[in-house]
Image (cartoon, rainbow, N blue to C red; front, side):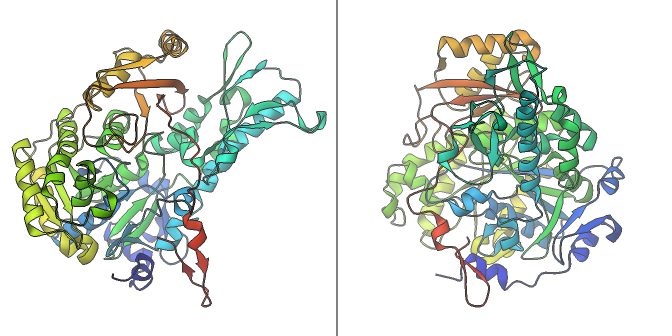
Length: 557
């Protein structure tokens, strides 16, 4: 075993953030510094870039996640470093990590090994305070709603139809369902509510889809918070809440600039969930990077069925982005698990399991083809991988029209990803991309959900109770029919059953509910048992995180 990620990050030779910014042509007076190695980039400078041409956009996605880990963020960082090594001016764009997974089971989201973004501890903890600002803005709206009811309820809220909950950036299952307003008349009117994790907040989705403060204010105003007894919608603007919410977010909306271990630029901004929201970093960060670099490498949450689909159908559609190439990250370990190998046997040679697991990877390849985006498979190498097995996978995916490139960036940084960088650059510069969203916005909401389920998940159909079908029809008739759908389901399977590995077919996707995200301008379609507030595992990572005798953080990964 090599050094832990946190030690590698701590030993790195970071450069002043002014130097990183200068490499992109960002002047010092456009920076809002958070110490020597973090800064926000001013909106005024970003506005000045409007007429510049954009660089090439590369999406990093992955096969269906497994407990073995695939290394999507690590690959994003390694690929960005490799492209820079080759003289291609490149920036990467990532989401900010949530505290919940950091102290739960998943760990941080700053990469790993010698392909990390730094300062790793800051990025995985409070960073520049953006998540706290999002949580404060979200909870201010909840407080203003309850305060309005307390002082007479002039808007006529029906307590049974208040849909705005509260958020906290921590996994806490005890807060999924709560009752607020208990304790007597001085504390307001009791009604049912609950908490979601901050990354599931619509405010986070709005924050990441807004191109500037004015759009942010307008989108926040359109957030639906409840209904009257006559079922008339009540929005944040009716409570005069979007103005103060925007004030709380005025600094957070500036994108954050940090660096990789190899001192290359990285924008880390925003963090919507990949299986509940659209799972991409902010539009403003991606657009800024495209104006400043020749290549921009970004990622979307979880596998191509979740993150890539939403990146294409929601983010790219809304922001007018057109990706030039994509990378599908795969590992031999994950392929073996999808082929039926037990977790404790995934380091053993097993071409039978690999062969069966290829079906999962093949479906992700077809997903990218559905969108017209050329792709390369990145085989993220682990120490236990054999040359024969790596060659087996490369041969197996060739009939699908893609190249599989072995990449060793975890161990060797950008130097281990140069072959991958060459393959990606060839694709991006070839002009082969014919990007188009999966469905037309004129389709009905129900048919949009069905199209994603059948074309992306391999399902035969979608099903729902009459109540849910009626809600689809109601939203369609209320003028939201042109919204895209944001499908919320488990990340561990193409189906809604997380234990169903590989590439299942013949299944149906049960839709439990559909929710209007009026500010984000999409419909959240809840499938299966997906939750908006995760719980901690039996042995959370938090139990191993501490400050040592030297005052250093230990156990964070």
